[in-house]
Image (cartoon, rainbow, N blue to C red; front, side):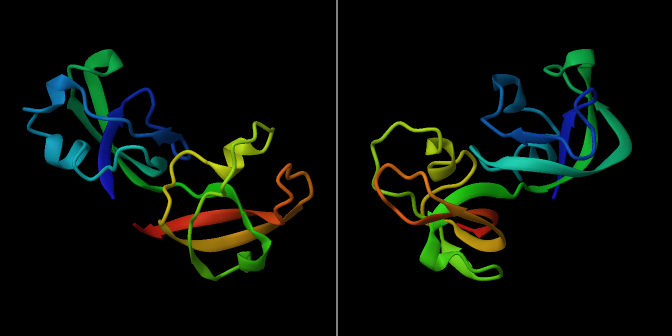
Length: 145
């Protein structure tokens, strides 16, 4: 997918979370290329930086570059019974109100409940769950909502 990003940020491999457009973007002639393809709350990774530069009133240096992006893979914890590489699952967060050092993996940014995901890699068991859940850390590719 093609979008635009500030010239100083346009580096292959950079990841960013798209939040929402600035007010100035509403009437911009590049809106359909720049922000329309992106989903609020998703994390994207720059795959390729093009040599095309446009002016932009909101970015530092007033310039943006054309980049090719994809949704970034997400590290998460899921039920160990579902953690098979290559399988497709609907991501669900656990029923949990505990504060622990793994909470950001149980409720990772950039992914939503019921997102259809492919398990790209099983990163192994986690033995620290305060609720006693049997969890595996996995790398997820978001396929669709």
